[in-house]
Image (cartoon, rainbow, N blue to C red; front, top):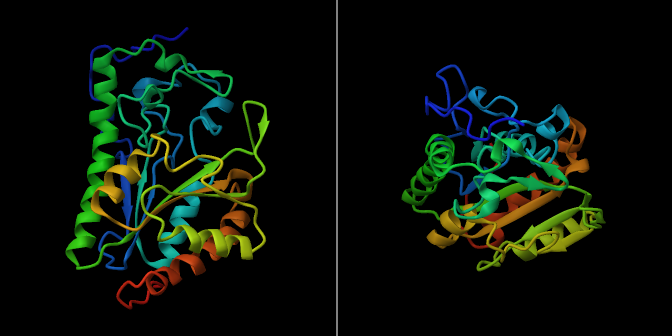
Length: 270
């Protein structure tokens, strides 16, 4: 079994020729929408190797929200809005969890053991957080603050995907609308996706009231922003045609948000 504490010399986790921990699209847009994608990538830092996982496990939902990154990119370009996307797998560190949450460095999930996270010492957790987690969240904070400084509190939308089956249990929903303290976007997405013929979950298959929504809690709710988490069933967005279909529907919905919740009149589309 691979050593979960590989890289025990604590050389830099990311080499200069590897991708940075995040990237920002349309970083100067002043449109009143901010998209984030915590689980956009299945990449591992080279120094961590394969973390003891086979190729399937490194590319399945345990490692990445399949289709969520592509959908976020599609929407950011179609709408001309700012988006922040994480560039490393949530198995390295989950950017949508409090670091004290055991699932921030997931040792086991959906029948798969993650050897690279077994008995992980605190100094290696800290190293991953310093290299990936905190820079990503600093980038999200920077974009929130930049947009607020324009005089508009942006609508904050976090994009994820989910599996049709989890731990042997079939999940009937096609879209999940996740919310907690703010409900200003809830009815918009529930109604419009339902009108499009989708089976929509209201805080299903996950609840926005659960503790596993660190990004919205700490960036959107902390700044009193209109906010929402969206879960798209992964088989609906696992290819370009699916991304385009769902993306076009979401484009229409998101474009309508400023007028429907009383933001200053601005054209959202590029």
